[in-house]
Length: 264
Image (tube, rainbow, N blue to C red; front, side, top):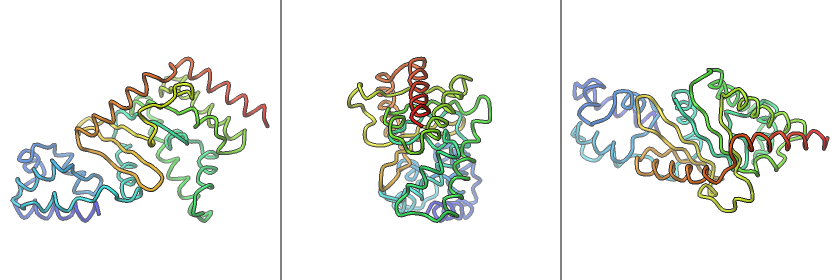
């Protein structure tokens, strides 16, 4: 849907004799935002779509044909995967699994092996490779800045053998010890918190507005409405205020990794 929508926008822009920059100026958007929409990497917010309609004289076509809120996770996540590569800051909240960009190969393979309906070994291998490619953004020593807020359930529920869990946990510890990421644990003792509903990814960029991506069991949603993104950012900040500080979080991670090793 994103590619079809983007192609139509480009056709209308070119028919109007406008460059991306000229359309961006008329619609009070950035040129890179227009470029991402035309390439199918992003969908405009309702407000952006209305401004594009006014700039192009297309009535309400662009705003009317935005995907509905129940669009499938896969449709949105392809855009999220691309946007991760462009972000200057990423803040993750994980409710059940370690975030994809922090996963080791063995942990990713174990998690993907639990998929239902089951996938073939070939498909699983492809997904593991994709997940590891996403993690390569951490090879840059500075960008993006990454914060990970982990529900304690992520650590306590064994998604793989003990040595795999210990390896995964210590991978995150080493990333934090080198200063590449910050990690905080939301302990069970904190009780209910504002992010109980689903996992959440917040992203910031140099030349476009911030985005949020939430994912549950049946669907995922990429949010670019400024008011909704601010609301989700506030939820994250509230939850983070109840989490364990960095030093205490790392101590807990090391202790749980040791428990997994001793268990084996």
